[in-house]
Length: 139
Length: 146
Image (cartoon, rainbow over all chains, first blue to last red; front, side, top):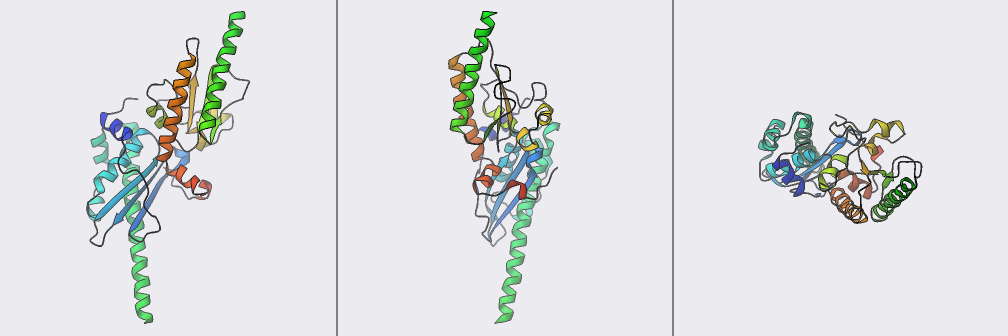
């Protein structure tokens, strides 16, 4: 299989590899895919009070295109507002990395991973808020 | 006939060296197929938590295949491995090494080094390896097959 230069660059020198504290309230974690399908992505975001993604990390089990797609996704969302990060479409990743048709699912997974991470963060915030108001009510 | 036997012995020794040195350096590497009843020059290994195609990409100096010889271009894991009882997860992590008439000791040494480097690098990238290290049972997770 021929890989584009950009896929090779991300594969050989992946950006933002690692993990954030998944227990932290300002961190959202998305895990998408399945081991039996041959790809699993974990993408994490740390979001500040202004709704800006301050940090993003990933780990991916999958082919070179899956690793490149998630590396690119973390690069793109860092510094963006949550709103703008959610605007990233899998086709943007396909175009940037010149993914062949057989690898399009890798870009879909990366888009899903961003959404899953943001969703997890928002769920944590909603929980914090409701707990916060409970506290208030008890006082 | 004598040459044939000698060559089979030479290849078996190279294969055994590869298997021993790789499994000594990397945990959770599994041999696919029978330990002795196999072609002398064939070594098929599953590297748990590392996807096969990424292994191939990480070892671009080596000519190896994932799964069976003919299916590297497809995304499906080897149907042969599945047929001999290798689970779906481990089938996705398999690499088939072929040693031949012109494979030397030095080349095998180089390949061993490359394999160990690549497995280590890709496991650091693998969320499954991370979960396994944290003691999470991967079977207990609700995955989203796609």
